Amino acid sequence: MSIEFQPYDIIKDTDMTQPIDFNQRNKLKSVDRAFKAEITNIIRLTDMEKLFQIRIVDDAERQRFTFLPGQFVMLQVPGYGEVPISISSSPSAKGHIELCIRKAGVVTNVLHNARRGAKVGIRGPFGTHFPMVQMHGSDVLLIAGGLGLAPLRAPMFYVIENRVSFKDVHILYGTRQPDQLLFRYQYEEWSLIDDINLQIIVERPDATWAGRVGLITKLLDNITIHPEKTYAIVCGPPVMFKFVCGRLNQMGLPMHRMFVSLERRMHCGMGKCCRCNIGSTYTCIDGPVFDYWSVMNLKEAI
Image (tube, rainbow, N blue to C red; front, side):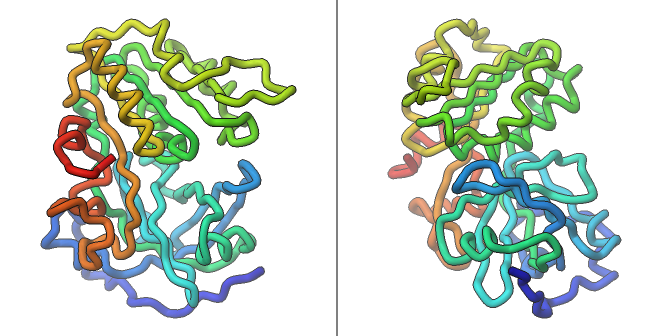
């Protein structure tokens, strides 16, 4: 299936002179336009998820586009709509971005039927980010459940590419079943990096599974945490935060040293539609990244 691209507002050359501060509400109007882009590669991860490698068409716009780990884009499919997707690639990669997309609705179903060369639009990036620089010199726990490995990949790439800036690094990943594991082709690469401890667990093993079995909190049993020099990034379904972050807190890790990415139904990415609000807090603007202390003080956040 080939998706034809329809014209969007063009970003003028005069708008490209300065980097955009994407986290300032009064400057969001600068990203309420779409970059013309194309799908350059598609990798099937599971029956429900595919990884799309997407390249911004214009050279100047491609060089200008930057993002920080934890941010997301609004991905537009002409004629069908747009969806918010966390960026799953390295912040240092200028040529393309990677988006892990689960087949879950009209727009995502169209994308799963698309082929290389299909034209799409990208708005953003939007939202807050994980404070990676703040974590320099510390141990880091990177914890993901299910599809949460997709937004976790950007901070993972940052840590791997700046490995000298961090001490011990633990990557903990869990899913319900083995066939739901994402990015299997990268596990060996991650496990071979010096001082990175990769642990994977599933809740319901099948006949082919020879790894660990149980809840993801089980992977914390053999990890020693030094509370004042450790940070944690946790991505996954919100219900997982209560158990993982609660366990980390019991182990002595302060809530302000844990960071989570909240999943909410976002529509505009700019705080206009009010679909992702939690009280007076808008996930698309004030999040999606929050420290766990803030999340615990947001009623109905998890």
